[in-house]
Length: 505
Image (cartoon, rainbow, N blue to C red; front, side, top):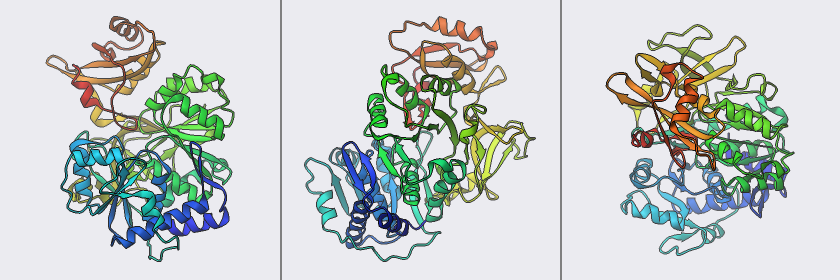
């Protein structure tokens, strides 16, 4: 996708339409184009050129879109990073990315400076919002000084467009390299699977951090279709539902922990959510109980799943709306351009319906990991990307995700998928969230431990949970330990911090 070309086409066709909605702010396509090109102009004036990198460290905000479009219009590579990243991980990503410029807020700039003051490649920091910006640049002044004229830089499909860093919870963060050719793939998938909601009249929303793959793909889709994009100001359930009601949001995607939290709003049935046609739950194995609860509480709503990774730009499967109820629990069908197979530990393809690692090839697969050729070669072998996820495909071509191969719990020589036990526990009326993991044990190798977030005012005990499981599943799948906590810790959208949970025992 040529970002600059698509931005010009859409802004010329729909100049006065609201492109971005954020609280009481509404920004038209014409304004987005002008502000993005001013950013392009100012970035270029600082000597930052095609192939250089800029670092975007922001919460969800319209400025994220302006900076992404401005940089991508001149071939400057964007390196967005989750606003919750801090400490050594933040410092290491800045250094690893070789970014020459940072866009951030006052408070987040302090976080950057608190973890280190030696960033050899960084020349300028631009600050968005109120507060003391000295000695850094003020975003609005920086933007105003730019030229709104369309820039003139040659862009090619194989040019690098984005570095998206994956979570470093299990080791060194890896920068996923996506090219301009990747930017077309999400809009094409949406048009293929859900054509009725890919028009300029559709109102989409983004709730996940825009610094992850979600932000760029939703903006790319918007450029192709001309639809309005609502940016939720926070994850607070009442804020989300009020925004859906006010702006007539039709669809958005999220991850199970956020979707579970949103169900907790006691006023859920009082909002007018008639505009909301579907939500897609992404990023991990989704509890079927959670999907069923949404269908019960919001009967007209279709709840579907999709599957992909940052490394696969981003969708490999998506469930068509017409199968939302019939195939609930499936992550959908393989989307156009993707080849998928399921292999055993020796790399041999298993029979249809058999359990295996999900291995894929096609245009969705990343170029590689930045400055990590060994890691790239470990995951991409003979043209196939090895996801590390386990799944199966049924006779009708619907795929089911069963968990990460690294998370299988082996207790007494028997394999247990954490998601199976989590789904069982979530069936208890007093359980809001849960995570199941294996704890080392001399006799059994591992035993199951369940971490649970209770529903408000519940006084459920560990003995009750164990009894509940024992009555419904095989003994080896029953947790031997149960702990109750206030919230499940995450290392990214939908990614449970299992390392932190193990430390509880």
